[in-house]
Image (cartoon, rainbow, N blue to C red; front, side, top):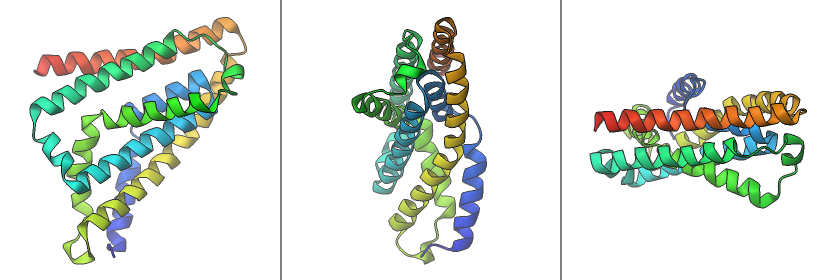
Length: 211
């Protein structure tokens, strides 16, 4: 069993890191602001699932291969940025009010969920984070390393949901007020989509400059 002190230290450190705005948080808040509470929750579950898949890949050793290959790493960065830009454009060009979006079909929520999964999976920084951060809280004397990794992954997901869920309720509440007007609804979607598009452009240009 993993040392309880390591679990506490991991939890505190992870919480501090999670409250720092990043790609996942921007994605979640943008969806909650433009598409309502349900879409925001679906986004959280999506990015959290993606994060845990990274933990599984790291446990299997796949992430190590990706992180040591500049070509694969850069490709993931660019593909992830393009994907985020596409999501941003979809939000930017959608002008429906949240009152109608709050009753979105289950299939649409599944789509938002999958977008969250892919947003996290295509973020190579998440791979590097898992590979560099998790080993610091792994003890060889505390049983199977793979079991410890998976347990820390569960804790990571729980903390991620705890941090981002209040943001979803806050952002969706603001969005509902703003969407009472069709004109404001249009501006909300343009703002939320524009943020994702801008972030995608920044990531792309930065990566091309480095390359």
